[in-house]
Length: 194
Image 1 (cartoon, rainbow, N blue to C red):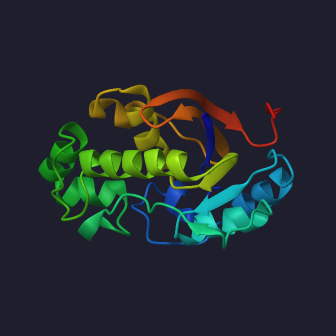
Image 2 (image 1 turned 45 degrees about the vertical axis):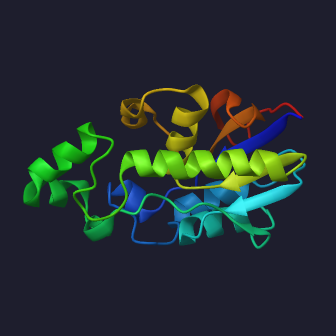
């Protein structure tokens, strides 16, 4: 059976604006306003998943999605870099950051590697396809969208950093475990297939 999974990236927050490793901050005013404006733009769904961060939960609420239905996959564990800006990490640990950005297996921050994230999200995606019928929507962190896209396309993990995931966009996957088609980056509020 074919499954349809729509991954929605959260609205803008201070962490996204500041290129900061997530510290669970809330949406900023403009992000909340844009998410509220996009409410009602999604097709009917049977299951809603929401990552545990504040910005994902707040985006789901603004989009009038039942955010309490099923906990979604968490974003990348950035370890000791959590809350730091990319500039701060570049200044303090340039070699470690360079290693992390070029070696998908490395996790110099003490958190999760890109490979680990991609494997975890592929497992979640395949499990979702096996368990859930109908259309699924998941409001998830941008790195979750990147990881799902990498695994769905069978792309090398080095492609992870080459995928841009703007706020409040939908990436749609259709297919079944191990065999996915991908439609990338439709802004919420744009026409969709039902």
